[in-house]
Image (cartoon, rainbow, N blue to C red; front, side, top):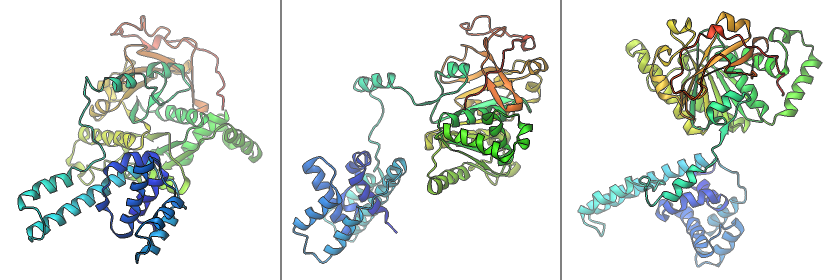
Amino acid sequence: MEKLEDTILNNLIHNETFCRKALPHIKPDYFTGVDRIVYELIVSFIGKYNKLPTSQILNIEYQKSDRANAANAHDVLTLIDSFANHVDAELEWLVNTTEKWCKDRAVHNGVMEAISIIDGKGDKAEGAIPDILNKALSVTFDTTVGHDFIDDADKRFDFYHLVEDKMPFDLEMFNTITGGGVPNKTLNILLAGTGVGKSLAMCHFASAALSQGKNVLYITLEMAEERIAERIDANLMDVAIDKLKDLDKPTFDRKMDKIRSKSAGKLIVKEYPTASAHVNHFRALLTELKMKKKFKPDVIYIDYLNICASSRMKGLGNSINTYVMVKAIAEEIRGLAVEFNVPIWSATQVTRGGYSSSDVELTDTSESFGLPATCDLMVALISTEQLESQNQIVVKQLKNRYNDPAMNKRFAVGVDRSKMRLYDLEDPTHGLVADSHVAVAPAVNVDAMVRTTAFDDFKV
């Protein structure tokens, strides 16, 4: 089994990005024995030629050195030869793991030097011990101490013109309000009453992401894996959900082949028992998927947030109120989005008062107002009997860190519940907002919304 030190050395000569990030912070005395000899060979070559060496070059350089006849020469050459069998490691994991290893080695060496000084074997006075330990504890790959407004002006200009990587929608108005989609490292929430369409919307978003060639992870704590997959089948196969069971095997296979041929992405659905799973379970799942299936999601859906458990509040039972619990869950899930560099979608219920309201507000969020305080985007899905009869749902922006939430504050989308699908309307704001540029839109009677359009088939 390869040691961590050997993995670090291997990637120093194969991964230039990692080498540039880690090499300035790795000291020779972090290694011992054969590993230190090989590390010094790598550093010497890079310093002389400003290029990464290959395992063959390291072999030659070692045999030219005055260490070539040492007793451990065979072990050195064996380690160098092993670098020819390189497997790419995930960069973020590699950097974080190497940084922790450097910290551990620095502290170990600092403590050993302090003990040597106390025993009278070192060449420094005891007064040097605090400084030695402080330096060891301060080891980090992050050398920045903040943004210098004057000196970092060029960086700020580049940031303003950076094209942010976003997960786009197949719905025009959602792209409009988010500026082209939701960015990575964000938590996005759908707020709606029971049966309005939270799971339907997330299944539609997941289907659209898959059809764009994205890798999608759908975590369900409410419905069985097969039920979620059934909804996505209905959406992508363009078949009413109650008619799926009537498909014969050749027809089903033909439709699956069509989906497969038009998407390079994968969709994994994972079920957990209600209220039993938290971000540590999700983190372990992501690690397992990467190891076993080489699967790394581009977007994650969690259905839904309120019935997750908290990794920090576990074991507290009824001693903690729902405000603190749900806020903790939201913070943990958003932290997961940042850690794995993906957007995460989830949902929450409205209060009893919000369920019967045709103009849902942030205050209608059930259980915890800490959730909207934590998320990056929150939109309410509003349905009434008249909207249902017209196959529509009204979407209302409640919080939006990507754009001005007063712009297009309310709009409608079409809904085909039989095929678990949302679609654009010709005039999505008809009768909802008199002037989308008004910061505070007047209250409207959503029941008066009667606009309908023909259904436009979803393209797989």
